[in-house]
Image (cartoon, rainbow, N blue to C red; front, top):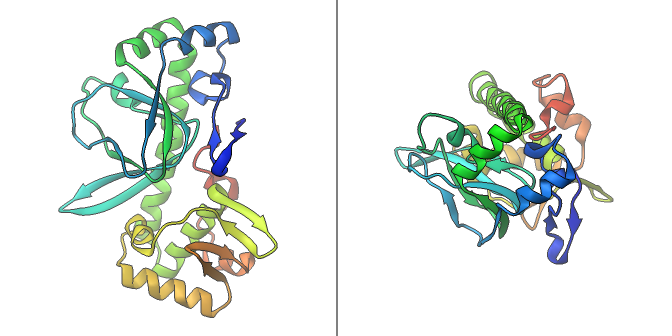
Length: 249
């Protein structure tokens, strides 16, 4: 996936050919599709979608990160992240109802292309590759949710946290002189909601990992300083390490 880098370390998708949902479509046809897309900008914390709302807009993320979550009795459960190149809302567009499956919030400033449901469905009819790509994307998301369920139901707190940190490195990591940096500033409460544990349990486990010199936390960034030890705690929860990627298309 090709990204262009601009000010403030923001990565911007510029070519539709790099968007997985449009894979296999000719450049000439992509230029026609581009005419159907509307440029949108969203500030950090903006809600693009609310769970169970009836709406039809579809978004293709060009830059920024978003969280996908559900609420239960005022408790937030984070399901995954949306990253540049991903499409949001296409599943509802292809289903029989428009009710949103989950809520989506911008974790930072986000640039996106927006397309109407009617236009998207016409593209699906015109380009069968879009439907095939949508199926592949759905399979990827199902795989991610299956792994999250495994974390939630089968492992103790240390194993859950260790796996989440390795997942974060595979998706937001950058090797530096100080170790393996997770380039994503999020608080401990957020991490806890992803694993269904309390903030206190998350804080205790992260402190243990720091005491054991497995990680360091500086300015809300996590640095993995002993990757082998961290992976040993994972208890072989993911035998094929590349399956930790949340978007492998």
